[in-house]
Image (cartoon, rainbow over all chains, first blue to last red; front, side, top):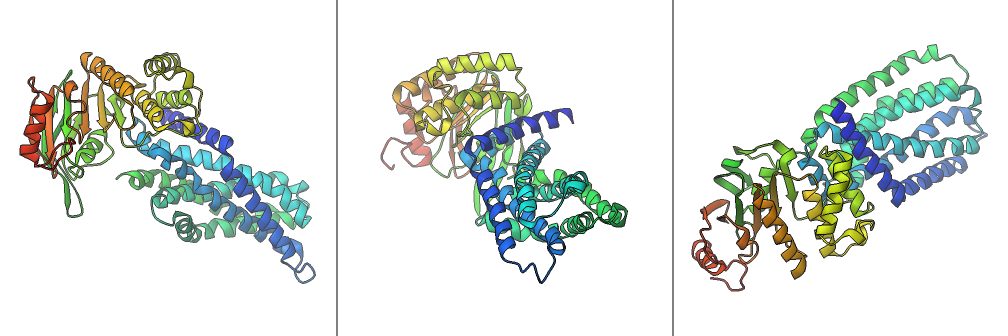
Length: 226
Length: 233
């Protein structure tokens, strides 16, 4: 396990350096997040539906689409000069490649969310001061699940034609359970209700994370073997 | 030791490997000639562990850690410098950091790349990229070197330098398998010669002091085409 994590960190660190130097995917995802929030901000009638009722859904729809935009990049990096073949020849477990991409994607999506959350607060005037810690907790919990499944699917589709289209088509149905859970917990937080009311959803998010990280780790080698 | 035992693999109706068997021991260099589509790349990918053969077995003593691989692409990251790429791959082969840095500098010097060590790979010319690829494949001092058309993109001087490097490498008891469609390339390195056609070895024998011209003649007779020398036979 130590070797898997060490190799995973070596690859993830390389991915983050590449992203830091090229910045293309991060800038695209951050701009996309800002644009979606802007569209939602101007595309609703605040007198018809209270902002607080819409805000959780808007937050999670934005994060979901921004994450999807980001997820394709992890394996696109490995297509350049067929670097993935080099990784597959190297004496490292296929699992460490999955974990590397999972770690890099988590950092990447987390950074995009860190840009999106203040914009969301700004546009929708939602006071998150009192619930910041639990809100960050639920964002982390849902993001791990999104990214775990998304990383596996992005490996599956990356060599197909229309990978950018295939990923959302495959991924969205799998994101429905954590998306519902995240919206329910976020709505409870924004309306000041106790977390005990949404314990079931929190358990679902945690179970989804554990289940899909495990499943994706086990299935990943089959997606990269020729 | 490197061996293949009755290796078979097909892509749909095309049999890329059709019962290939061979065995190489320390110090042997097998140069594999064959026309495009003969299955040379598939054979090398099977030996490297990139493709699981549908039947048969490939064995490399020391496993994947012992393999140095040069395929059709560089496996280098454009936004990393040449040095960073080398150290990245060294880490994945678990080479201790100090040893990796020393080895990287030796290889850069040997391939006349020292001054370009801090240049990002994406701005290198094709020839320089190929030199960096060679350094990448040798960074962990592999026991077995699998090379698929490794002279592509190298100018005459760099190709000569690479041949010398390979000769030194083979002289230290390593194993090399080099695939090419050109009989003139790498023939002087060979201890053994194989002609591959339609997934089969139609000839596998020690080189035994045969000249490039003699090998080209045998190739023409057995495979039916010219072997990179220009004419169809």
